[in-house]
Image 1 (cartoon, rainbow, N blue to C red):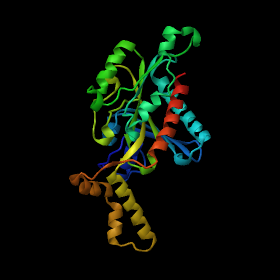
Image 2 (image 1 turned 90 degrees about the vertical axis):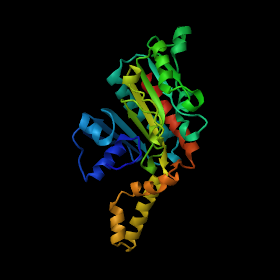
Image 3 (image 1 turned 120 degrees about the vertical axis):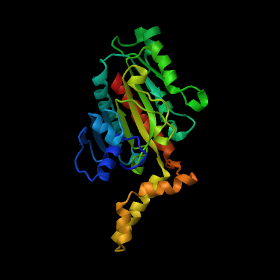
Image 4 (image 1 turned 90 degrees about the horizontal axis):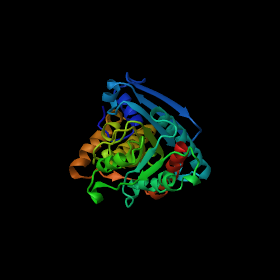
Length: 312
């Protein structure tokens, strides 16, 4: 399997198939796609056994990716439509694990002062919280209102506390039935930066996408089901270089400049070659686009609305 850095199960599946020249899914992985419109595509990957886990390095469970084209220029109507798709997929996952009105804790991971890592805390500011109202002002809410609480625990570098330790303390006292965790991810595809949402019912390992993995946040460690909502906000410099080289080769071949060298280069794993060159010099930076501020704001709206309509 290619040695690439990505948190997306869909990308891992695609690259595994490419590395092994497979046209169909391998045993232990089931995939389906649903095209919502010209700009929105939903891909569902289900890992059913240990063979699937071993093949793409992801735990058994459900992984749903909502891809949005042209998010940079998306208007309010398109953002709302995408959030409705996220709502539908999140509702389906919730129904697999908890009852309709079971309490939920929402966790926004990341550092609000670092734009590519600020999505989690920003979403928390937009989520409809009800736990305190149910306790102190129940008369203002419908009797069937779900109990929802939220926290943005910060990062280890500023708190000195592992996120898992913080969440275990909260869960022991608040006693939610399920946790929804929002975090920034790393992608292998430049086009997916802040233009995709991955939902998974297998939990998450904070920081894994940028090589700074912390303790995993899963049902095994927290004691209750965990749904992770991740949005790719960064890629490796090696990924950009490899993708650029692919475009260069394609252009050279279109111009009739193809030769044995170009054909060979097209077939090889350019990402790994470039990474081996950059890594020793510490030049394999984690990169984010210049429009990241605007993209984060749009993704914040999509994710927050998706959560609010799914849990209420």
